[in-house]
Length: 177
Image 1 (cartoon, rainbow, N blue to C red):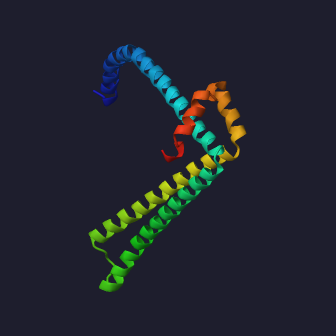
Image 2 (image 1 turned 120 degrees about the horizontal axis):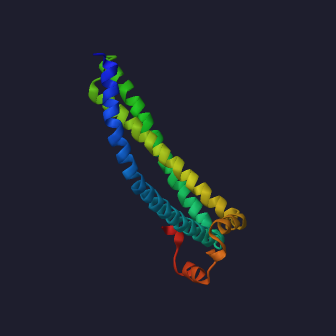
Image 3 (image 1 turned 90 degrees about the horizontal axis):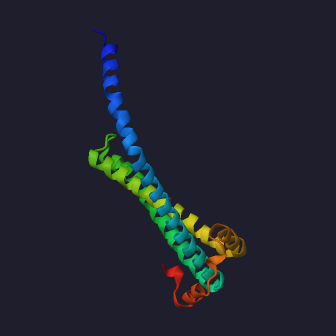
């Protein structure tokens, strides 16, 4: 018999059990997706409240904003410098090996060290990029705080400016987290 006949028979034999199992699992998947959506919404609300709290705290304390920006700028410069150094050393290493040994072929260990070093440098560079993005977000939220406040109110409602929250701000330093 032809192979297409056997493929047809296999498809026919699998179609019925697969359709039954799909019908049985659909409700479970819908419940799981709904719970996941609710949890993600709650986490996003909590995160947005914390970001707003931090921006409000920094907006009320310009000197702390300057310290925050200075600290993170130094950290980013150090991270970028280290990643650049790792990438340069990973690139120079194989060249130095070739010159010293007078060969074009590199041993496996040198290739592995080069690849790991360049990957590490690239990873550190990407982390620095994320840090830059985060610091810019904080800066713009604080610098344009009235606009940021209005956008948060549109999302969360006017309940974001509670007296309890203002009292908590005096007790804690949300920037150090």
